[in-house]
Length: 409
Image (cartoon, rainbow, N blue to C red; front, side):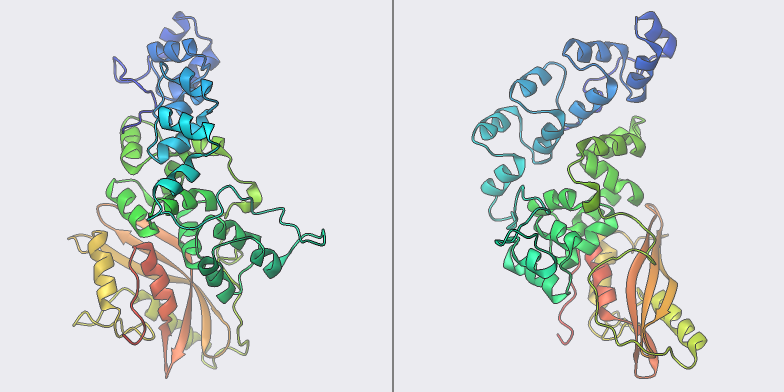
């Protein structure tokens, strides 16, 4: 199914000049809104005749593949544009949406019931707030998390990390484990946006591959996804002059989560990327400058295997990680001529003489350039050499949809 922001093919490839709109009886401000969303005068008139009075509303309906001649039927079914987009994301049309809605089910519930083999256990429609103890007091911390009804395997991933605050609960109630939360957060998605993809059996790696392959810049993924478009639909809209700013406006209209539940994009130094970790605090290495240089070198070589392609020498316990790196490179075209990936350690903070927090960035240059910044990692002194921790490497591989083997496999 294809979605076009303007819902029908314009005669001249785009909106007419403002003068034509004024001559056609549109006020200047009204005309600019329709033109901003790339509608023609004829299309605008069709939408207005259907009761949709401005270009932004029409664009939202169009994202759900609803046209002027069908919008009345959707509204008669009690479905607004925001909900229509969600039905469209799951591949459902009006007839099924109307039927399911009469039975009290929304798009998430409908998909979960019809795809039990891919749908993860999740608390569909449960709010992350307002869980109350039997005594009448509000639950906090771990107790609140335990009382949420989250699937026990998902809950376990958070409890193992000692991450049980409201942000953890927001991700967990959408069927996302602790490791997945970090990856989806890095893509810029909210828990509910990521939850819809997880419900469909999609991984972050698959999403990155699909959108990168469609030529969408990494920084735009979240807004197009949040607006409810597929990678192919987003590529089509970009080719027709619809921008990521347009997508961001449509995404904002959905407003499915309170602001407190949104992940945010603060600088890495101040943002909490994940669970608290019990750290053995102590003085830094005696040769702090030398240790810092070694850590930077280790991160620079984090994506470089040995000659046999079996080991990643700069990763602690990297003996069997070469195949992971090769698979990730093959999936995302990094092996292609003229494409390269570089890692840079942006900030090193010593926990003690043998451990350090590292904020790093990854730049992929080539046909589809992209940059992953503000990533959180760790370095450890292995013997007499500073190396990237295996967990840091494997968490980065998850973005490519690659799972590391057990350490001693």
